[in-house]
Image (cartoon, rainbow over all chains, first blue to last red; front, side, top):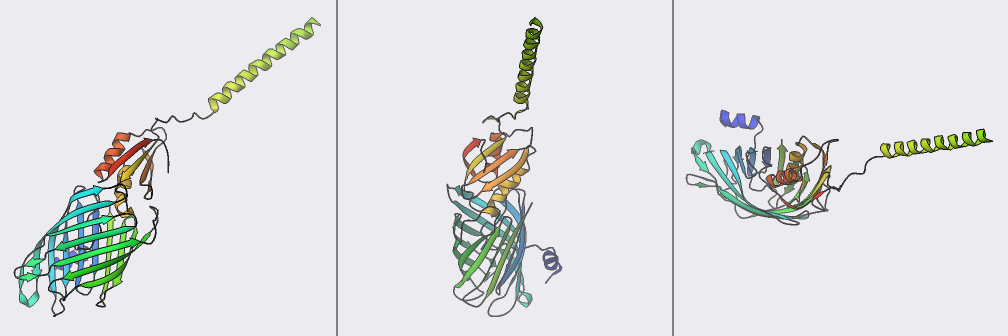
Length: 213
Length: 115
């Protein structure tokens, strides 16, 4: 791990995940995100320049099933391409972009790039999202695809924590074979967002988001 | 007899004056009922406001306005109520603009009302 990587980690910066509900905060706010699982550990942070644009940085540690460790460091861009504000729901299309380096240790390093897209729909009780993000570095592919659906146990007041049950189906190309399904408990309380669960592969997963302003 | 009548009429006049003064004092000391259009409170019905994680942007931006005393959010009814500081007034158009800039749509805006 290079000095830059250590500095990023020490600063608590996070890498953007493809599984976030809303991958950026409101204009003028900063958001930090941390994702933990056996295959992909990420830290990232971004700052919302406008209500539709955020820039940030991320660092990830990838652990393929076939062995080895890889470090992905990127500058990130998030764009809210479109939002539908409905009477009792919200729907969004998000675009992602990343540019940086994938360090594969003895196997060398390469310039990495990672375009992606997410569509989501949410009410006070229901949530659904589909995400696809390509992670490419030379001939290496670490693409992620995920489908998420969930429901809230009850309709919480604004100042109350709101628990959700989320089921996530995810595929991570080059890290493991097939799809991984994870039931997760999500709790949202104003500027805090935390979720965790254990996948059908026995993989412990946890995600955290905090907004600062 | 005349002296008694004169005393009685003076007493009635004094009592009447006192009653008028008391009534005026009561009227002046009573709180003035707020007019419906004085923009002490503005309530917005907001489309797309479905989670606290997202709605905090609305709350934060409205609280940052100098004239804002408090902001209340009700996710169930999709309402945001803004109250003005004493002696200050809210601009409904400005409140709508803040909510729209936060990424939401204002379906209805009412002056007055509370959550």
